[in-house]
Length: 115
Image (cartoon, rainbow, N blue to C red; front, side, top):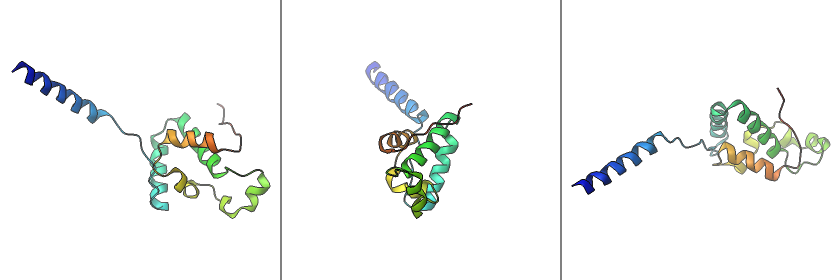
């Protein structure tokens, strides 16, 4: 009897602890609209520091492979830098994964604004 109660209590504790655990948002890139909406939700959920990192990551991923401002100015795809331009590259990623990707693929250097 005590053995059954112990397993039931353990199962209950595991169920309760998993209810409180919140999964990080992942970017839904199935359409431009869903990408924009999930990007906005991801941005709203982020801390002020992470918001800066996310904005910078989006810029860095958009500009990956660009070697100069001249290249960027001549590329029509880079005239409006946003999540839709990179949605296929970051589809299903969390904020942390997007930031890590930007660090790996970026060919530019930039720093977040200082207080």
